[in-house]
Image 1 (cartoon, rainbow, N blue to C red):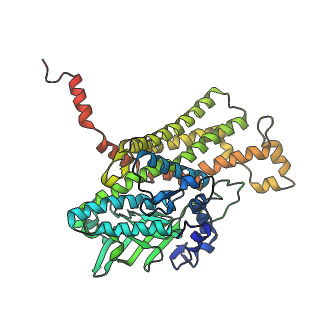
Image 2 (cartoon, helix red, strand yellow):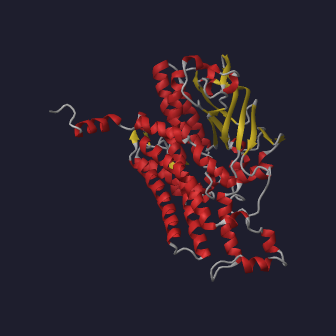
Image 3 (cartoon, rainbow, N blue to C red):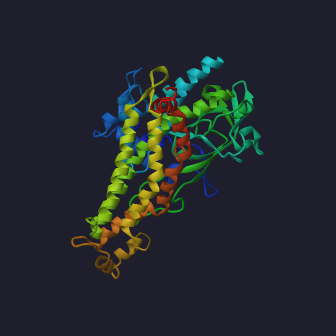
Length: 483
């Protein structure tokens, strides 16, 4: 099959998946106005492959078949390939209005982790998972499919292990093993794009003990699999928006679902982990090793937008030369460029790993992600301070369009000489949309928790840092053991 077009991608979503919105079943996701916005946003990945400006970045040759395929499916083997992958993620996000385009990137992050870890499981346990993963990978490349990724369990009592929960379904588990497959029950949260992807990869959320073996499960299924129920949520779920008051969020949409597995059957050929509890943690980590690079790559356009919006607002308000304003703008520029530099350095310091593949340098990629998350709310504060309280008191587009009130908006909303009331209001609306609206709130929570919490990044860096080297150096400088 040649590379999918946008229309082919949209047509592939016309199946009988069970999606619910505010308690009501959506019979056809392609006909629902809010999901349509999300579908159009996700189609960015398919559009870029056919755009002459981006084709060289978005399309590569399959090393095994020589056929064209999406760059997302190329297992990275060196720093240059990691840098190109990061560039594609950043470009898609920029073209997608600063909201991450997850059509293929999250699924390919998971595929890379599965390709590596499945071989180790086979070597240790005598299983045949790698052959299944490779067959699924080949199918994904050939059909150019779109993914969702389900990893985070509902967890119940966070102080207890999966097998200790009062409700055994607090973590997804195997409830029946058959000759031709397994039956699973439970739920996953924070599963993005399930309303409009083709396949869903399911991974463990944490390390397991032997008593948790029923919860050590990984697989892939189509999103119209019987028993799979998708309860849709996400920012701005109630309404559609006009592009003047909401210049960014009116054109993009991320749907999330509470994903219910109501005794879902998974055939053997789609099972990648089935009770090998000692590999649940390594499999989760092998996904994260790629996904953290995805995280910081797609954040870069939004940081550029924050800096650009702050500068534009300062100019419209006539305060761009004030010392305290320059200080805030310097901070925003430094924040964006430090994150970008760390992102690139994580690729340049790529670490060789199993089977000819490389991963982004784990310490650097976790520092980058933590740097972004730790300072994100300060970035919002600086941009909001540059704009002022008008962010939450500005008039609406209807006021501007009114014959009676429109001239008043033009007269009283203008800034320094040469700016119009409409233009200044447009910048105000931009900052309001990305920092104070529900879309802004969504991004603020995303910064803290998506792709791993700040504590997870700290723990990973702590584990990865060469403490022995620096400890030995400190001991040497202290002359320990010398007269």
